[in-house]
Image (cartoon, rainbow, N blue to C red; front, side, top):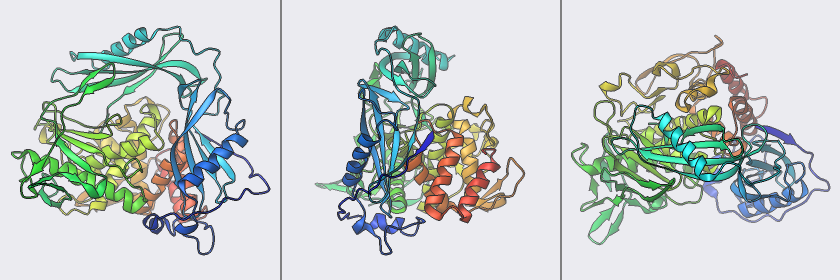
Length: 555
């Protein structure tokens, strides 16, 4: 990610202010920013989303050359953030001659009066191709991707393998080039889904990159992991539905231990998510003998995640549009995973095999999976290399913060990921350890030039370690009844600033400054800029961000 700064035009272009009914958002944001629009600034005089989009559209026309935009390119708005002081941040995706541009995303930053301040771009390279006609055919690209999926699952006999190629412009890997992005999907011997996205040079046929396409982690109700929890449901006649009208109609359904039918990368038939119903609005028994018990955990996790993003960050729903997603529980046969799927905007949970994992519906897992949805609607960090590690770490960070936010005595907040779902056969007490990531046997504590070659669940360790140190500091302490020990890579002592400030800084960096190509160096810059926005360049928080990154060897 690179930044460009252009002086504001003069005379200043003024915009008419309109009222924004967002008192809750203003209450959360008040006091966080280092500057204010006026001495009495508030929600009433902030630009609206529509105003911000209009201002940004004018800027794109005025500054097209500096932003690398040409007549062969089109842009679409992905997300809009309007700060409490009136600054506006409009995020765009880009196409070139009607083809999606991977790494073509950028964020335009505007002053309160609508003037252009600067921009963050995933790439600053010129996007111009001699032709958009591929030398490699689509069917051949599909064959290569299917082979790559089989190679990535060596030792497993895959069934129903299909692949759907899409022609794109790849601006993530050096000079922009024509490429095939192919989603290859299949099923393992138990019928559980496997998927891989393969990026292939459309002229030479060489593989550019590849990554897993399933982002993993891994009334009232009696849950498996959280005790008795409150639930908002919908009454339909004499029965109740596990659908929450107060949170965008988010609901939970039973997948009946079935899997999805996907052909050519498109799921024509999804495992049925039959909506759970109940006669008395008291759900589950706290045991796996009742199928609705896992549904209680999933719905509760969705509720707490929704509330965390709304009440802490002012985000109304995972996509920011007030619409709910949905959960599928009891997916597959002893399926040892959980995943978020952008195509259905839903979370899916396996039951585990009972030896390695129990049902994967724990609170921090739910927060993790839904946070993949937030990332996809904001920075869209590529699920490969260092951006992929940051993508996974973002979900671990916010999954952890959701667990703290819920303040559930049966599942107190800590910096372990998935500690509730692991069983003795797993051999460890959690999936990941944010204070010392290497305790899982594979994750990186410290950045090095080879970190990007790791699986994204292990390269995430660097950012997880940073997040822990920023929140809690170095040294031993007990958190949530669990012993933690924040070590550093440079031997320095780090003083934490608390988990709430960690969340504020990371959320702003993700939604305002990070792009699809952000690496660890870019994440340091993005979080420092976010800390400066929120607390000031001379603040203890700004210094703590710098110190925590240095403590994990990101300088």
